Length: 201
Image 1: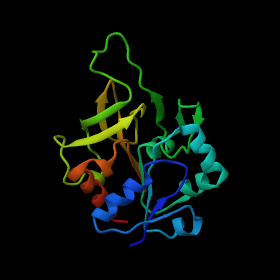
Image 2 (image 1 turned 90 degrees about the vertical axis):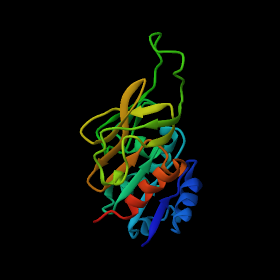
Image 3 (image 1 turned 45 degrees about the horizontal axis):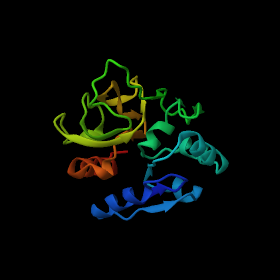
Image 4 (image 1 turned 30 degrees about the vertical axis):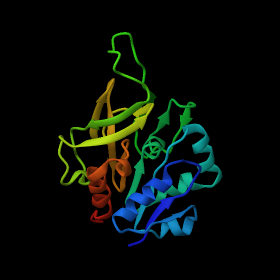
């Protein structure tokens, strides 16, 4: 099986590669269009800023390429946000694979002092509706680091509550995405990656 991690101007790509290596999987990190199209599985991870990253994707024609992919695609963190319709970060039009909106966390005076931005740390998720969550329960915890979140909607595959309920995962057709970092989420994250690699197509 050929696994490709999309190379672009975002951080955290290597940590996903290392997580796959721990599963005995060697991935190709590339921005070559033909290599991405020919992959059996494509992973679109990232940490960064939405507007500059979308500009990079457009300049390298990766925006249209990603949207046209037919094999299973997994977006992680910034990857999830860029797969949505629009982000408040830089007032950015994103890929539009999912109709959800990306908004900035806001702490109101009504929220307890324990809430901080960015949302950083371990949280449980609920409403699991994707084959990504095979052998995962609502008692399991995942690692999050983010200041922006995707709203809930028709493509929400899991929900996390932090300040507001938001999409911890999204799924539409062959596109999957998680706001949490499976590569930093221990055994449960490894299960997510394994389930993605084992998806039936």
